[in-house]
Each structure stands twice: as C-alpha cells, then as structure tokens.
Length: 121
Image 1 (tube, rainbow, N blue to C red):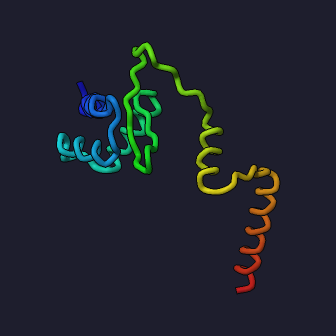
Image 2: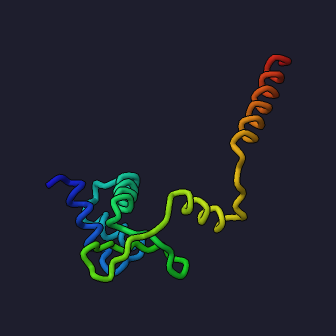
C-alpha cells in the first residue's frame, strides 16, 4: 500500500462520526510528521472529490465527516459545481451573474488603456 493510500485511510478513519479540521490536522500530523500542510490539503480535497469525505461548517467550526456509502442511511449529495459556487458567493455577498461578452469587452478596454499608457510613457 502506498503512503498516500495509508494517509487517506487514516483520515477517513479519524473522520468517522465527524472531527474538527484542527483536531484532524493535529492527529494526522502526529502520525505523519513529514507531511506538509499543502500535501495534507491536497489529500483532503482529493478525498472530498472521491466522495469519501465531506467538509462542512458546524457552529463556526470547520468539520470533516467520513462518507460511508455502505451505510443504509447514506444519501448522495445533490449539487452541481455551479450551485456550490453560488452558495459560496451568497455567503460572501450577493451573487451576480456575469455576462461573458460584457466581461470580455471590459477586459479589452482595460488592455487598450494599459497599452495607451505604456505607449505614452
């Protein structure tokens, strides 16, 4: 078994029933002190993409919960990446649909202004 497979198994085991992100990080780093923060985050994202781990906020704390697809009470998450983006945007501020053509023309205008300034210098 590869190191990454063992690491994934450790994370899923620790996240059964739910665990705070900070506590999970501490426990995993104790078991794998050579692991970098970037590598840990990469594994966590990978597990979420594999539908083996779910990250969510509970009372202001980020939590991870392992997903057991063999559990009789398991129901798959139903959302699209676009819907997730809208949720994230809504939590930050009002969501605004962006017209691609408008954005491209705004970028063209900004590039033209930048080039004009560069030529005048």
